[in-house]
Image 1 (cartoon, rainbow, N blue to C red):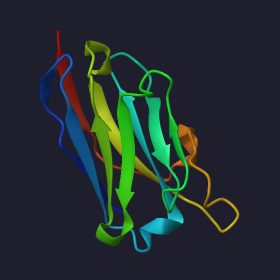
Image 2 (cartoon, rainbow, N blue to C red):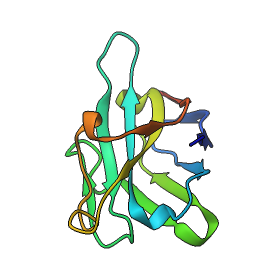
Image 3 (tube, one colour):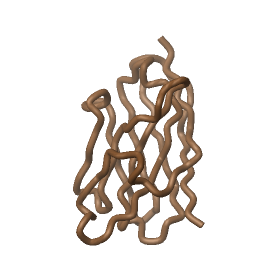
Length: 129
């Protein structure tokens, strides 16, 4: 059974920072792109950032470019999302996801929610004004 578990969410003031982590039970995590998505109450889930299997490619939503940094440590079976200069509009439940990629896709980092097969339970982030 594939399990992803997010941690690190919480309450932070605007302008502050948080680091989210994602622990993955996936064997050979380098075969999977990892992504972060978020969902605010009443809104659809939206793409935040993604990283290819070996970390060679990263993609960010325009709303977080320059503020968030996605990372991964395949040896430790973890992914991370460093969030700096947080804004109230960043408030949401943040989800970690994993997307299996065959040899021809391992350099890619998908932005599409429907391409990710495995999902964590989410960790809430609240940014106060």
